Each structure stands twice: as structure tokens, then as C-alpha cells.
Length: 274
Length: 274
Image (tube, each protein chain N blue to C red):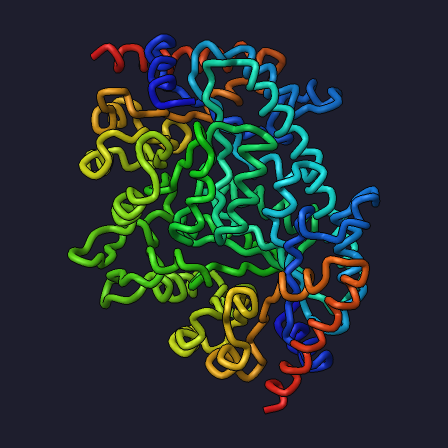
């Protein structure tokens, strides 16, 4: 999917919502456990109930991996099912990254075998760990910059000495990675829990889309994110996982998920019209 | 496996060799393709031919993931097969790391479902992305510090300003992470392509084991690694992947792999006796 197509979907759906499919066997409604593939069945019902309210889905791969090859099958089925929705952007939240020839193998798995539109990548190993993912036309790298967790304090917001100046590591990541790709094949993860820092982020990358986790369960504010992070083409994909998919643990989980997703879509509609 | 047990294995086998199972369907001998699971069949024959010469195996998860759930099954079978060798340390080279509750899911997959002894973890997301892996008694985190690839220049060896001084990011990772675990549950990845830097690494972490990739195909020298990196309990696991497992692409691949592994073991025996 191109940046323009993504923006058109945001405009027509009046939403920049990404729904995180962090599907945990221990948290899904009990009645689904009798299904032959409870994880996929849960995802399918969530997707059916919410796909007109969001522009993206983001399965976090850890939740599937924790179940071994059975979980991996559920992920494959989910990726496959999402393909029937042409106006949906799909993100494998995998936080991968390895030396060049190995990153190529990850790219193969997520972009060829499962045909995701995007994958999240960790920047620690630098350029050759990221560029193999950028070889795929129409696919996206979403690079970790400033994450929403407490551990972001350990390295990301400490200053690093670049050739001519000193700046926080996450800014250094934003800046250095400009040489690897552009606003048409790279996005960045910037956590909603540090919304005021979005203003600084926008000084470095005015045009790129940002994937913003941390609204809801982790305490970030949608208003603040839009205030500091929105650009001319919206430029935001705001993710919500637990608040939506676990809105109810009973048989009404899908309709309750829809209700929560609609609440966010309505807020987004107002923010987009400003 | 405890640090003492690992050291005893190194002493009795006169080897600190780790064999990387970067098993690629495109590179394994053609006659294996008729097997019901060529990847596992290849691994099994490599393991059978080399397990007395090495102390560890390290499947790089990317190679399995690239094949989807079938690859994941081959990884599970490999992990299971390795368990029959009591004096083998098993490393899932996965380079994972996510917010706390998500890292727990990865830990579950690699430590519970597949029972690996260790997993490689990326440090970018900080403490809460690493500590869930340290909750498992007898299991190990192998944290990326200074990797063997060109991209290590992008962030790892640039100076970062800590509270009282300025030092390279990889040193900051070594130092800060001392608060998270200790030499009995953490190791570090330090690439052989930067062997002289091992002296600096040893000033910060004299006792920890290091996992050293990059000897062989990537150009690192075993002599240099031992010179700068070895400590009283050896403290090194030197990995070799392609040089050993693809020593031949014909039916003699396992015996040729043994020959290459033995060459390294003999060099290691000399280095250990110094």
C-alpha cells in the first residue's frame, strides 16, 4: 500500500485507528476454546466487527510465537484473512533486526510468505539490519524510535554524540535512518506516553507516518498525540490493543470491541476535521 | 545450565565452539529435499556428526520463520532433539525485545514451549524488555552489545552521555544492564570482527560469558578473540555457522562439517591450554 492510498483510507474512513491483535489464549472468551483454532476465530470475529472503523491491524507476533507452530499457523491464517479487506494496512509487530543476510530471511517470512504491508524493526544493529526490508516495493519498515515503555529511559532518551552535535539516541535514529529510506517506505514508532516529544520528532521527520502505541492501557492521550504529531496527511496510526479486543471477556466480545473502536473513531473524526 | 556446568563442559570437551544452525533450504544438499522435513533432517545429521566437538548450538530463528509454521515445526523438533544431549547449551538466536508483558510472551515461547537454555535479546527498549527473560531460573539472556556487522557503526560505537561520563553506546549497554542480571544469567554478544574491542569489554564485564559471532565467513580471528576476550572460566562461546554446516553441499555434508568443527576444536584446545 502506498502512502497516498493509506491517506485516502484515513480520509474515507475518518479514522487513523490501528487495532492491535495481541491475542492471548488466557484472555479470550472461554466459549471460543472449543473452536479448532481459538486464536484465529477470535481475530476473525474482531476483524469482522471492526474493519470499517480502523485503517490498520497489528498482530504482535510474540503472542503467536508463544504458542509455537500452532500459534504461527493462527498468525498465517490471520494475515491471509486480512487480505480480503483491500483498504486495510497490515503490520507485523515483530521488532526484528539482524545482520543483513539474516534480516533478509525475516523479510521473506513476513513480506513474501505472509504478505504483511509493514514490519516493526529494532534499530540497534544499524543500516544493514534494516535495508533488506526496504527492498520490497510497496512494503514498509516501521523503525523503533521512542517506545512507550519505561525502559525507553535506559538508552533512547540519553544523548549520543553525532559528528557535529549531541542529541538523544532516538533522534539520532530518526536522523541517521533518513539515509536508508524515505517517507514512502519508512514509518517510526513513537509512544503516546511521551506525546510532548512528538513536537521534537516532527522537527526531524515532518512527513513520515508514525505508529503510536500507548494510548489507553498504557496511559497516553489521543488529543495530545494529535496536537503534537499530526501532519498534512494525518501522518498518524494510533494503536489500541487491549482496550478494544478485551472490552468484554464474554460472548459479546466482538460487539463490545466494536463499541470501543467506534468511540476512538469518533474522537479521531473530530481531530481529523480540525 | 549453570555457568559452572558450562565451564565444565568446555574443559571436558576442550572446546568453546558454538555451531550456528542457520539452516537454509536453498543451501542444504539436494538429496535431503525428499525427506519429510529437510530442515530438521539436515540439523539432526549435523548435530549427530558434531555434538562431541562443540558445547553449544545456536539456531538463528529467522531461517525457520522464513518458512512459516513448517519452519517453526522444524525449529521445535530441533530444540527437542538437542535435549537428548545433556552437555549441550542451546541458544535461540532470536534478537527479541518488546515491552514487558510482550517480552514475557517471547520468554514463554522460547523457554517454556521449546526449553532453550538462552535467547539473544536486543537492548534498545531497555530494562523492562529484558527482565521478563531473567525470571526463568537456569535460563540466560544473551544481550546484543557490539555486533559483528557494518551497521554496528551507526549507533553502537557512538558515544552516549551517561550521568557522569560519556562512552560508546555498547559500553553503556554493558554497564546499565549490570543492574538487571549478573554473570550467572546474562551473557553478551560481542562480534569477532572487532576483537581488539574485547579488551575494553573485559574491563566492564570481566566475568561474563561472551557469545562471539563473526569468526570465519565474516572475517574475525579466533586467536585475537581468545587473546582479548578469554577469562579464568574461558568466558567465550565462539560461534561458527556457514563455515561448518555448509562445508559441503553434497551427501558428505555431515562428515565435512565434522572435519571443519574438529579443526576449530583443535585450535580451541591449544588456546584453552595456554
